[in-house]
Image (tube, rainbow, N blue to C red):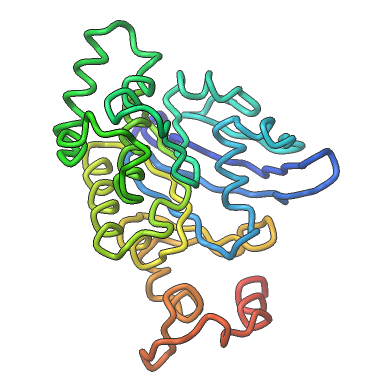
Length: 271
């Protein structure tokens, strides 16, 4: 096997991030995404998952953040600190948390804006046709004002708008947040289709059931550090993951997160 085939599409190496030049948010994070694979980041709120995505995609400066040590490699090339616009041109697109659609524009106008870097109107039309074939629901809603879409439809629109730039790697922050179970299943079916088409995915997700069902590999973060990593199949069978993230006790009963002792998890993961 040649070395190019072995090089991950994304490698984060010993990454540290400072906010406002004083707040250390990431403390030596290492992770990889292999081409055509899905990697998931799990962890409690404040663990540094979203900051990791922002450091990769180049949007940290918007929040007065900066990479203070370590680096980000894209197919072996150092892209640390590259501005977001240039990262999009390199094939990295970030779907941020919060469903930030352009609410006053219709679906097709939102999508067209997502393709602003494409070379010419013909390529934009071809990409729109691909989007509507991939996500038929949006084809039926193409003239609907985005602000009137349901939460799940807005999430599909955000993913579709990101796809308009023809990315190689998609970073997605909390795609299922606040959605009904049927819509969560639809969103992850869509992500599964994209993965089958060769898209590389790095997903931050609280719904561990859905995320680990799609992912090839997973990382668990706490306090700005990676405390556990393994193939997704192993994480699904890990007792601590089952208990804390999947809400299951050793006997298979449902558990409430507040009953899980924090010190027990850290003792097992950090030794």
